[in-house]
Image (cartoon, rainbow, N blue to C red; front, side):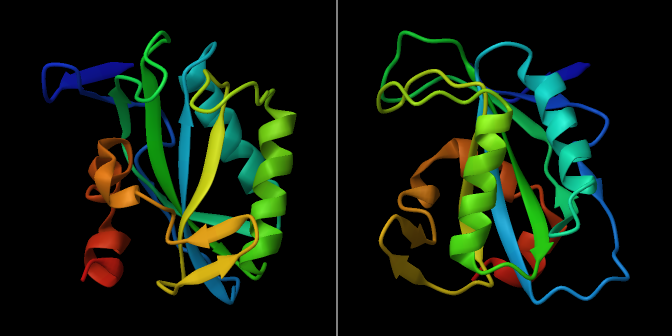
Length: 168
């Protein structure tokens, strides 16, 4: 593992699948950007396991991943630093069904919801979906406040796809 400090409390971390760019031959209908975060246990190993898990799930294809950002918590401050990354995911699932899948994956990876901004093993959020806006019960896309969080904006700016197609 290598760290590259980029600020007083920020550093990039690298793992085998972060960053990554891949091409698919399968046609998927949609492209989503999924935020990945966590701060409990061996988060970096969990990120690699998550990538492998997604590779085995035919409903999604990870086209690109960012480098991993190590950053301080916000909200509830009495917890470990977070690791955050983003994934460009190809899928034919609807936004609601992708959210259901991600919530299930969080459970598989030991996520417990005790209180807002609590420590967590893994956190998966849909940041963007086809560069469109959605507002449904329990789902708002783009993810609220994404542009105000370094834990999202810094990893996003390392993506080739985001910088080419999504940034406006």
